[in-house]
Image (cartoon, rainbow, N blue to C red; front, side):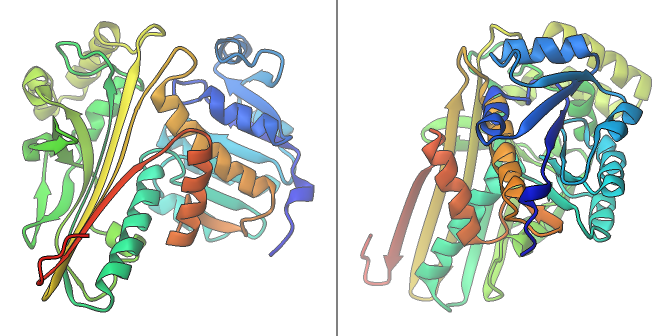
Length: 389
């Protein structure tokens, strides 16, 4: 593999939102990287660093495409924490300057097309919480299920639900840790998933909301995006017949009722009304500095075959504290770990996700566990003889 480490100069971290966490930036600094935080203004970037206890340890600059282009050097890493629509432009900039690119967002067709042209550039994606840690859990469960079932033809049911919640619930059952308009627009996108052997499409995701228990606590969940391609990404064996396969969002019990007026506005399709509502929600239900958040990520795989069955569940349930929000920690730390792998020359040029097989997923999970982010794993296995292991 090409040694890229000698070319690394600076990590350009673009964005000062609530997912820009202290732990991620600290990891990069501990690793010996020079870090520059780019914000809407230099003062905004400086305030972000100070709030995270990192004043004076990283550079602070006002984000401007021309200024960033002038600052980029071959081997630098450009990290986009901006909305996904900005990623292609920033990746083109990285490609033009021989720099690397990292984000926590899903791979879009445009990103994949650009990454296919990369000769010197590592393109790291899906390396945050969801997508990111959820992929790691899925790879772990698929590998364990494969070991349990062997080559048996199985019926498989898979679910993966993640949600950022207020640690102390309000009547609205939510506080906005990212742009409300992005949340509302996500609710306008159809969701495609598999349930009870049938491919289903929910034109409005919330219409497919169901109750979902996690560790004795009731939640509400709904599908999002297109779940179906991830079975291949998670290396489902061809002999596993998928009865259900759903990836989606988790919300507190009572969420759908609390959001009924929001759904009515989204259903109207009126862009002006939706944008106005987003502005109102930002003022009424912000995630404030004094608020504590909670992240719940639950991934489950159930297999059954002629003479046996196996079930596996991975759970991550974390609350933020005065040092850092749960969301900031769980997005920024795995992303920064992926960036250290770029810095170390461990990734070849081209497109990468957080982990693309079970072995690499365990490496990422081991790193997170060493930093205090542990996932609870429970498995059961039974045979026709009734043994429970």
